[in-house]
Image (cartoon, rainbow, N blue to C red; front, side, top):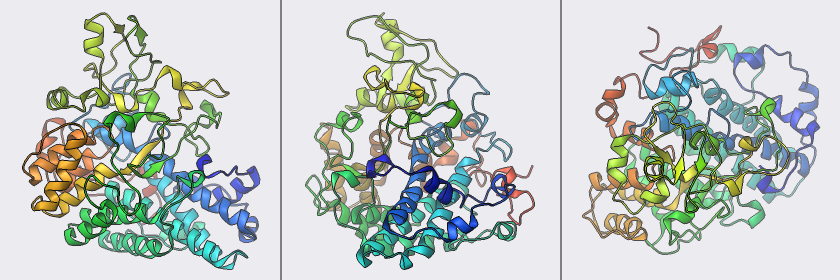
Length: 503
């Protein structure tokens, strides 16, 4: 998390990362840092290093091949997995065509989030005794709890039946852990966020932009309530975040005037951003450490770019080549083609090639329609050290204000003057006239507004629409709403596989 101005020394990194994850691959390694860890967090600098280590897992949203955005897009009705072929990333391909199983399920989507949770659990046991200002201890504690809540929210949405662990554990205890009722996991998420909100700052300086604030925690809590159908509580939290629709909220949030500006790489931490993941081109990583936790580039960029791109006309986009994942479906193209958001959302390579302005080589499941929000630009290719394709610097949004507006409108039941105003504000920003508010209208607006940002699959599942919308892809109700637990997580443990994945 370079954005919060800290460079972890290798000594610090080793001390914190050795807290590990619950994956058996970590358990097979003899722990050698116990004394170092127990004697760590002796001052504010070390406590801050521990906090940064907890934040580092936020990169899972858009960093590494197995990132949340491209994975979750692949299983929605708006995208195919794409890539270089049917075996290019077995997990992402299996999720896209609903042949996913425990053997090909990307284990990092499980163990990276648990690594963040275990780092948080350990830091929370140490903070109270660190010799530093009490208010700063309260803030670090609040941030750590908010981060733990975010990681648990991702896990419970993806896997549903997961262990709930809130204290540090010895390696031997990992084998005896059982899964918690999802209700208990959600209760812990709510508790962490509610407690965190009290001591989080209302605003932060530019140097601290990637850190949790009251507004970010309240928006996340509102989303958590919405996923449990606690609509009145969701609406209350989200209203506090949103303020007057179209205006500036108490936390300083405001819709950008130009939708396309959301995807300008230099427009980081803008007024619409509520919770954002920071990326940098300065980590200088290569293939040997891609996806291992020290890389800080945005991998979604290279994954979504067209293969073997060549600019022909002077007015064609100037792009480097990519790997052609997350191509849009024809159904989504037909849905979005007349919408003012089209150009910022879809790179229409089919049209560019037909008109002789650019060329590319179609990848697997090619439709010619690429995710323009994350298409890499030649100007953003790093000239520093490290592998260029792994060091893109575009940030990604976890929650932004238009998303929060539409969640509140949904929580209000898709009816009433305020829900109408929230929907109208999102539409007005892109030049669309008012349309009568309803749940159907809100669903359509979320599809258009948030396309390609990793939300669609989760939306379809929580609305109960997945079985219908994804039937042609092989989706099975009662099974594919959640992922299988990775096979290696089940070995020699008391964990039980999710229903439908034992065949």
